[in-house]
Image (cartoon, rainbow, N blue to C red):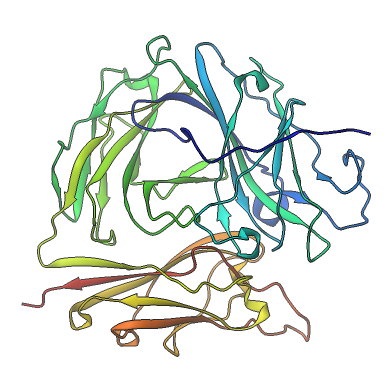
Length: 416
């Protein structure tokens, strides 16, 4: 009998890059996988599978990475998973690296317990002991979930697995630079120029990704609205401020849909070298928005239903509007979903504002303009997704609405 040790990893300590970090990212995704290019983790109760090591564990075959891992002058490591819940009630996701003890993948703390009752697509970060990795090629991992499942079919989908190794920046050669277009304490308008200053030759820089620490819609799906905003999908960076691939590495950040800020903001740049080394520049801090006569309200949803899948019927959430709707000039609804090809409309206070978009059986990120602003009312509003009907008399999948639900942005402008 094989006995495993599951290492519980508390959500403490450092995780994900912060300004000043030097690191490499070894990115993997299942390009040939189904369900939009995923790795399925789990299985039906009673199924047989040669890679299940013992009864009642649902373990995937090992994935061998072809990247050449560099551990010279390494300080620490972590792995980031692009995880979608898939079948509600699935829990106990864990990763094994190079045959070492299993490491439990943490749930998102801002999602109510039990998190596996709420549809979600999140990017958990798991600290990995450096001793679990080996230099060079041939590093591998396996994933598993608990057999507990109301479906008798526990399953999550993994859209990417990213190993990140951090280095001693005093000893490890790396790209250098700083944001040159903004100074600490700057006031930002609706169009923000982004540019770095660097002495690196252009042929040594692959790209520069600009990121910000501020309040915005929760692209990352974990319920944290104020954070460094960006994430990956299929190993490509998404929902950041902008990317530049040629010197002088200029980009423009359009803040037209960025919410008014309660706290100062910060900006940084990830300078990605062609050799894979990445430097996150020191942050430009104390930034604030200054958009005379213009503002944006982020209406965070609440009363989010469990198991928000539209085949199960109408589902609804609430959000509160505090702005002066007589000055409203635009609105958007923003959310993450899976299989939206089976959605059947979104309504606000009983009026349909959107019909459908997106693929079946795959992830999608929605940002939809609301044309009729009269659907909003001061105070509490109700947003509803329609029930997916039977097709040819048969039940189909429906759209899964991921945490934190469908977020609402409203633009206001003086009309003088």
